[in-house]
Amino acid sequence: MRNQIKQFINGEWVDSASGETLDVINPATGEAFGKIAKGNEEDVNRAVEAAYAVYLEFRHTPVEERRAMLDRIVEEYTKRKDELIETMTDELGAPLGLSEKTHYQAGLNHFTAARDALDTFEFEERRGDDLIMKEAVGVSGLITPWNFPTNQTSLKLAAAFAAGSPVVLKPSEETPFAAIILAEIFEAAGVPKGVFNLVNGDGEGVGEPLSSHPKVRMMSFTGSGPTGAKIMRNASEDFKKVSLELGGKSPLIILDDVDVDEAAEVAVQKVVRNSGQVCTAGTRTLIPTSMKTEFLEAAKKKMEAVKVGEPRTEGVEVGPLVSSKQFDTVQSYIEKGREEGATLYHGGTGHPDGLDKGFYVKPTIFSDVQNDMVIAQEEIFGPVMSVITYNDIDEALEIANDTKYGLAGYVYGNDQDTLQYVARRIEAGTIEINVAKGRTDLPFGGYKQSGLGREWGDYGIEEFLEVKSIKGYFK
Image (cartoon, rainbow, N blue to C red; front, side, top):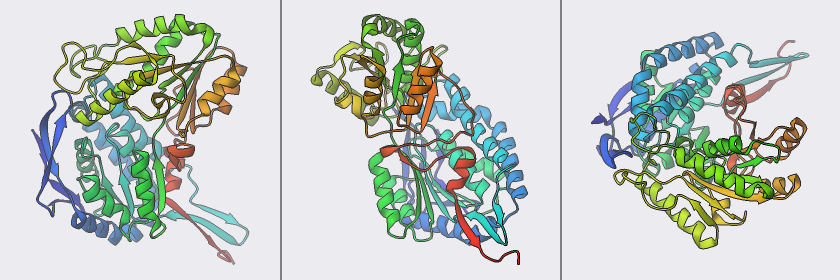
């Protein structure tokens, strides 16, 4: 059992005010494997006051000091590699290989990217006799999701530290232990007291008072649209700065000049990675009408080859969903797809054979999907592919952009001019051509109901800054 029933406030592990705890469930077994504190408003107040007490001092620390602090964090983070991998496999159900290559590495990338951004980031600019400066916004509240316990958490923390903003972090109560390890990493790295504060608990007990607190000047949230809207309403009471990374229903447009077998592999991987629990998952697969039969046959073979199972079993690519609630949600969407008239081509409801314990689902393919169906418009957050046909590129783009979301988009083909044409016209914050990896400092964020603001690298640092003009500074 893993247990941490204290909060990390002002550089110390302290008792939670409520004395209550929450069980943390291992999704591979459906059983509790740890406990955390169930924080409340009093915990939040203590954490915010600790951050508020140091925000002016931390704001004005030299850039070199913040860069050195990030260097120490990177060093301590790498020391905890094995423990972080094991922890994310336990709390998220991610296969060990995914925990290492994606989850662990993503956290490391964000700390190094923020550190590197400080080498060239301009906090001050002279215009004649006047000065433009960027300074830290102040106490920042961070609320992070369960699906990427280090990625989403580290990118916010790294940017805030680089900018000079102290933080109060509320991680997801479903995957809290990676954040607890981060607290220990910061402690070992000598992050000054009050600069980082961790309050575990649920949304009602911790998230609500954090986003409403008058001394919190900025809220950074990753999660669902309804929760993001609630945070915006709370923040609007005293005009906090808000950064939101919300849902997605991203299109993958497959062009007519591809190798169908290769395209099917790409499409399947865009759906099953992290058990489909990815906000940027390419779950709307758009294919030329002429390719339909050949593509579906190839995609089914690829999906059948995906090994679903216990996360520590060699060769497993897809583990369980994070919770019974998420399992039920995905099951209801699969049922809805059938009710709406889509063809269940592969997979379906229920557990995969031999995996009745835990929250495992069957990777699923729907064909004959119309873009106005619920399964094509709402974020399922599970390994469910909706195959939609198109007749020409303009129709493909019309379908791709016919969504309330705009987080990511994908295009796969061979003709470079067409690839660039499509990439420029998809309405989304991140576009990927032909499985390009890209740099770790590219801006990340969404159009429309996928959010506000940008994260990663120098763009992420900007979110934690305010801009000040000083007239006559150099006279």
